[in-house]
Length: 428
DNA sequence: TTAGGGTTAG
View 1 (tube, chains in turn brown, purple):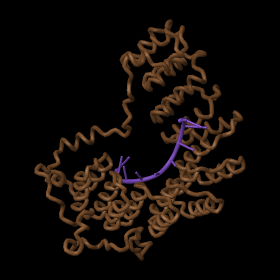
View 2 (cartoon, helix red, strand yellow):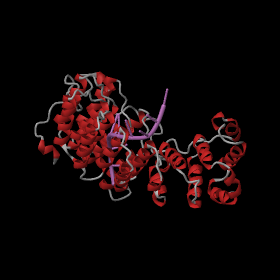
View 3 (tube, chains in turn green, blue):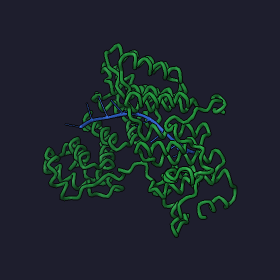
View 4 (cartoon, helix red, strand yellow):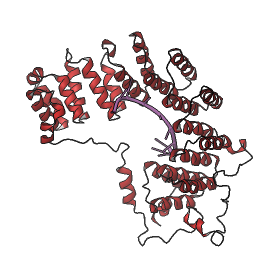
C-alpha cells in the first residue's frame, strides 16, 4: 500500500551504470557480477555437508544473549587482594569484600544477614564501590538490597549513586528501575549523573511516566538539568506516545538556558519523529538546525533517512543519502541497512539486493541486520526460496545469523506452511 | 576520560 504513494519508482542512484534487473541473463555480459551478491544467480557449489541440522538451529536460538558482556568478568581471589584500586578499603573491609565476591550468589543474602555485626564495623559504601571495581554488579545489587531492607543511615546518597552507576554500566535498566520502587528517592539528593542514569533506566524499561515524575522532582529540588539530562528526557518523550509538544517545550527551554544542541539531541529528536511518523516536524527541525549553522553528523542523517524510509518516502530517503555524500558525511553500515529496510518496506527486493553491491563498492561489510532485512523483504513478497538463498549466502560469507534472522525465517515459513513441510526448507 | 543517540523480528 505504501508503494502506491510513489508510482514513479526512481532508479537506484548509487550505481546508475549498473542495471540491477540483470538476473535473468547474467553470465555472459558481465562476469564480475557473479562476484556480487545476486539471489537469482546460481549459488557456488555447496559444501559436502550442506544440511542445516535442527539441533544446530536450536542451539543458536537457545544460546542467544543480547548482552555479550554478560556475565561480567570476575576477578580471582589474588587479583582482588592485590588490586591497588581497592586500597581505600580497610584490611577488614577488603577481606569481607573477598568473601562476598567468592560467596555463592544464591545464598549471599543470608550470608549478609548472618554477618550483620561484621558489616556494622565496615563502611558499606566502600564495600559497594569495591564490588563496582570488581565488576560484580549482581553481588553489589544483593548488598544494596540488603542495605535498603535494613534501612538506617547506611543507605545514603553515595550508596545509591554507586548502585545506579553499576547497573547503568551493565545496562541493567529494568533491574535498576525496579530497585527504586521501594526506596523514597525524594528523600535523597543525588548527583546529576545518577539522576540521568536513572531517567535513562526508566526510559529503557518503558516506564516513561516514572521518568517524567522523577524529572519533575529533580526540578523541584532546584537542580538545573544538564545537556545530557535534557537529551535523556527528549528520548523519554520520543518513546512515549504523542509527546511531540513536550519535546518542543524541552527544546525551547534548552535554547532559553543557552544549551547548544549536540549530535545526541538532534538524532534523538529526529528518531522521535520517526516513531510517530512526523515527517514535516522532522524536516522542519532538521532544516532549522542547518540554518543555525549546525553540521549534522552521521547518526542524525541516519535517523532522518529512517524517518522518510519508514514513511515509504524513498525518494526523500535517497535525497538524504545524496546530501550525506555531498557533505562528506560518509555513510556507514547503518545508513545502508536503513536503505535496504526502506526498499524492503516498499516491496522492492531487487533494489534492496543491489544495496549489497553498493556496500561492497564502498568497502562496507553487510551484517546480520542487512541480511535479515533482505530475507524479510523476500519473505514478505512470498519469495521464500530466494529468502533462503540469502540466508545460505550470508552464512557462507561468514555472517552469523542472530535471533532476529531466525525469527524472520521461522515467521516466513510458518506463514507459508502449516505442516512439518516448512522444516524441509532448512534440511534440504 | 562522565550520564545520553541511530538499523533487522515479534
